Length: 382
Image 1: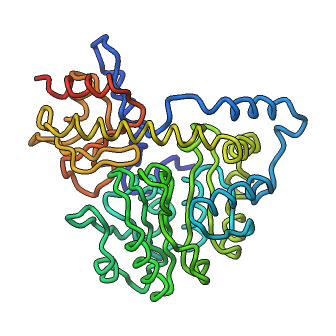
Image 2: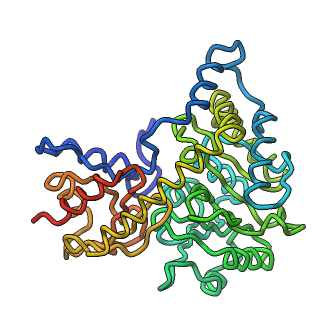
């Protein structure tokens, strides 16, 4: 048996690599952890109560229906209607074990070895990693000077092997929100070329507005060329319960369920019950969390405006700040020094870009006002 990687280079989790650096610290002051985009606060009390209740029910540990519990899909359909103003049928919803799994299932259902998927650059590292592990060609679509993807550039990069274009909005790692009109233009391109537009909307509640993220679901034929991916991890502060969703054509979801049956069978029942309660009963709590994180972004933007230590905030939104460091050295070395000397943990931009462009991803969402002040002080240290 060969216990070797089937790829030409070893692939590690950027989050795991970042946390491995923590062990190199010799300082005793608290670490400022801006690495992982996971809520550090507990879920809503009503959700926690339901989780405890389900754990004691006879069916609490049972498999769920593969497509998701009916009342969870119905609750999410109602939530989508409220957010987008369009009617989504429950048969157009597949509940998954997190949004990462949603992405993997959809891309694997749409493409096979030799096909290509176009993703934005900077990209979410798990997207790039999965596509390569799945034997698919990855085409990077660089952001323009406005930090947004360009539809004409995408058109030039399409080939006969392209099966889908992926967009993430708000973006990870940049935090940039793609305007509805631009999403609509990309959907037009997908329809024109007979491919699929996959829109990852993990951070849709952190856009600073209640206006619909897009109007794609109002198109009568959207199921033919649009797929929308969602996460409940940040929204409800339950990342470990692993619940996400795919919104798309029933025929595509049927293919995705074949894959789901092989890798997880179903999304965890207890997590799905938490989501149902959150969607039905924790609306005010969700809005309060989004408002708090929005306030942190304002404070973060203001604090980084003076470029403490030469660190320049280029874009920010949702959970993230995309920051350029000032040093003429590999970004990995900068990240290591930030941990060991300044007690600040971030993710190197090289996890999200094909080359080293001197960027760092700061996840500010779990900070408070005092933390942001301390961050500025530590970045300014010599």
